View 1: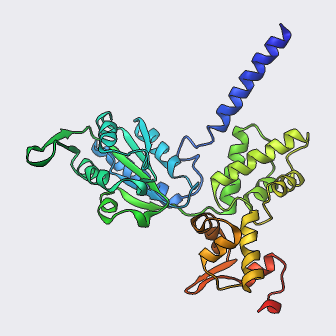
View 2: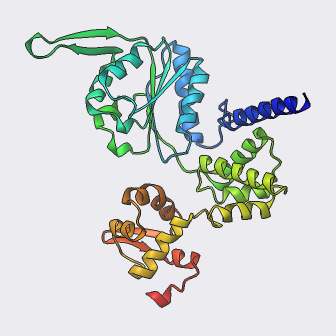
Length: 337
């Protein structure tokens, strides 16, 4: 009986831990750290709509992955007191899919479409009247006998998110009358505060200096910070040690992350440009072939952070490692010029 009780308790604890891991998203505006300009603008938008008794206007968020676009959509849903329905651009394959989603909305609902730049152009055309006039135009039949049926939709707010705003058509962008907001990268201090909040939810004791050490390697991104915090927690638990700077350093070394947040692939990019191409300039396709990686992966995942840190530069002739990049790898810059 004791073993059965222990098993049940362990299952409950595991379930509780999983639940905690899934609830790191902030529940109120005050809990949402960073992006102050966007928070203030959206708050005014929602308050004004509430006072007028109108539905909030459609909003578009864009920026790198992991900066909090989906979290903002959840917060807007909670602030308005209405349900949020979530889908993504690739998931809406046919006009019927979009029609089904829109006609099943209740008045006041929030429709969140992630990666909206991957929405099929034919489906995008159907979305225009839904956003502007709250109607859904469906064509039945083909040829001369085709006819259009217009369905009235309940009032709703579309919140969209994208990592590639340049791929959105101008007509679609212009229909986000509530605003188009760009999410910025976070400072190390903001990331530190996010880590401390997540640690309190996960019941982890962490000091300011330890949280800051994780923050410095989090690529200015909350999602990465929470991932690293969990892995440091796991290492401390398995090794029966406290979560201190030494534990953090060992965990991140094991993950291949150095003291400024570069991954093993990041360092390989720098090393290849320096050793094989004399520091550049060299084309992205050539770098990708040298590393046996896909060029879009390097361009979208690795390159932005390397450029942001000033370790490489984009030039008309290709990528070039900067003096700072040489210094980080402890390679003599003048010697290889």
